[in-house]
Image (cartoon, rainbow, N blue to C red; front, side, top):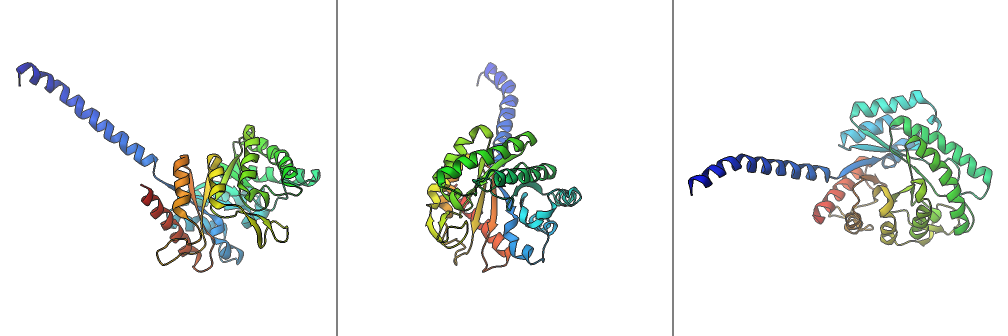
Length: 311
């Protein structure tokens, strides 16, 4: 090597090493950013909560013990505390102490935001506003509501645009993203809900996409009950994933290999990957064969195994 080339290399080498080091750090940053984020849905402990064997603070602590990053509350378990800020402080303090993020409240039992009766619909909006305030106070980023009501599918959609749209206006003022789940009645029809969300696009409304909950017509005609018409799970999930603020990774039972025999996890996760979904994976165990904790851990383990299989 010539003297000049050696001299040039001696000057360039430190900069090349620094560049490689920075590239390595950047690659690590990208890898860290892509790391899956797991939250725990409170409904996973619905048996214990309903029986009075657990309260919401216990749920927060359980989520932390199982290494979840955040929690998704269900309003049913503190329905009368929506404006009790002293109680909400106990949840905030418990979450902070446990190192847990408050991500969302899944709000039920406020009335029907898609009701044909104006007074009923407006009453649901007003009660929903109180839960928006509670969500804001807890530091949540989103709040899930139901698109339930009455009338024909098209009438319900018009009513939903009014009711959910009005509540979304208030939520936007408070910095809370309103989201709608496929959760019974016409909301479990993927095409119907996708079109509703498209028509609410100017209201910043998103979705919470559940692996299950695709029965859009029951035998009795009520919201819940034995199913008469069920939407294709994977078609509906694909139709909604583009507007997903969260995903409910749900399981009911497991086979000897730890797979959910009735829900194709690889197919769901492939849809998420192809859509570029990078939000929280909300673990929700809804079975009865295992203890709630064991079911939650098996659901999370299946999610992790499925993700590893896609890489």
